[in-house]
Length: 236
Image (cartoon, rainbow, N blue to C red; front, side, top):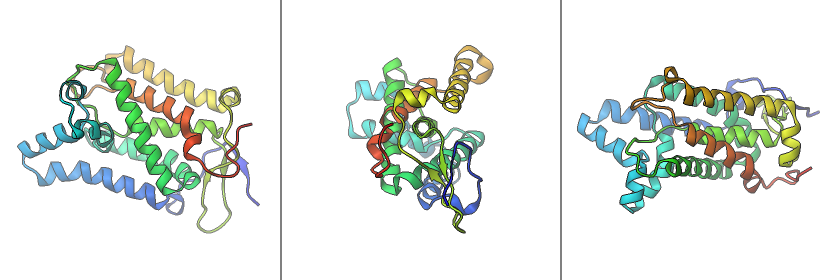
């Protein structure tokens, strides 16, 4: 019998779906290849081409500057940046991917990454600081998870296919759930601290793009239903 619970599912090698593994591998390739197989000059060009730089979208209307709104989510600044993001990708991405199916999950990733980048752009369209990292899309996964109330359907099979379960909650009902308020409240608190305290890295080239986090979270929370075609994906 399946159980609907708001707890986090156990992490093991059998409930990380292939599409999430592929996303981790692609992000790893975008991180490793420039650093170990390209010259310093080519590495710099690689970063400039695939990261999102608001100034380029404002001043240079090229297809690549638009595509970089999404490709920037595949790049990471350093070891801790990619490791942290990939851990959260596995935690929130696995049950969401199992719920949506691989293609809708990838579409959801691209959509939330796009909105995250555009939010960063709206706040400072002339910025020359590159935006990179999957955290905008992962914030979208957190927002999407909140619309299920973090409820999991944990199979008792060997595969242990954990997924977000039940109908998608209305915005009002989701915001009434203590676990949703706790997760989103903690997330907002962390981002307020990022803005307020320089120790969190809000200055310099490695500054944290809280604007992208906010855009991704709202995109996932408001629009995850578009990507969920399950029969039980009805509002209550």
